Image (cartoon, rainbow over all chains, first blue to last red; front, side):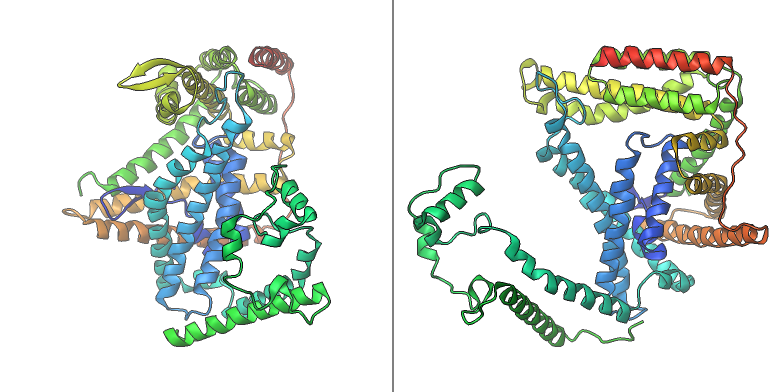
Length: 294
Length: 269
């Protein structure tokens, strides 16, 4: 955090180092390392805040470490050990992590005027609403701080890969292992899809014209819309566009399937299969390399 | 190499090391807060910081800031150094954040600057923010400046901080100074062998490579220290020496903290 990094464009920035920490140490050890760095910074160097240490640790150490690790694993999935994609993955990991941390901090700032204000309406803590806090925080992080983190992560990754290859190979899951985990997670999500039928009524805004013509449908819309009365006739735009496209599996189940849970599962498998087929086709068309899956 | 990124970084490292030295020196100087049991001081000062953070009224925050100034005087800390290191820095940083709130906070317009209306609510909010930060930063800096680091860590046990975390903090502290010195020496040696200026791309490469070397050294040092600990019988259990004992002045300090916190809580509601 003490390194001044010259950035393209004439400015300098400091990097937190969460991107490279997550890549080298893995997310759990990175969480600990960044938390300790923040604690030392606050308690020993008097930089940062004691009462804000928890929020800083959550934003940078927890969310930042897992975001960096996830982005790196995702982008570098299936890439060869010496590929340029891994450097890009490291840069994106740093950039994504610092921006997620900044966004979380901005949200924490932005909700404070809603939660804490006096009788006159004067905010007692951070004075800016989400509308101001998010752009103000993100402008600096999407540009200068994000660039510093991306340059530092990519540069350190390249240096370590060249000189200390063991360090950047330790925490990265072998691609085959990662793919197996991905399949496992996907299968779990597929099996959980029938949970959708536990939700009662239609999702807000996903109404059909027939919902407006029945009393039960209108009651559900009214209840879901903060008791704002639903119109008796379906809006003309909705009625006109409703028949523009007829889904091949309406309401997540073909007509011949009687069980709703089985219909959900079948639709999920069909949808995932379609996406995988498209991804495979795109990979073939773009000629993606099939390197040694280290 | 003229004043560039390397010089700036070397200055940053030197400043950090200098601060460390000042903290250790002031922590061992005889004074009001230095003479207290670290546990009493830690809990008392943290309670005051939390009171400042939760306070809703300006007089309470200014009172806590005044208490901080009085404690700094009683602890023989230089007010000039506190002003330079704490108050001015905190003011500049917070004022920069708070200034737009004068205009952006909706409310009753009380004054107009170049066509922009300052609202009463905005002014109050900005003042509250600055006063809160000044009070909290003063009190937390007093804690750090008047307590040796190892005592502070031992005192953290009274707040149920796990012993493993304290051991990690202690080891990090021990080696962060060494690694800061190493980084400083690396930059200084490079700077002393350089003639002319590096372009930005080369500067960037130098910074990143130095960071890489430092990271490798850190990992190596960590492994060596762990092996040395294992060789000396470390099996994962951490023991701390705790020889703190409460004396009469500590009991008086507990009463003083309790009175100050009660007054601030009542005044700050």
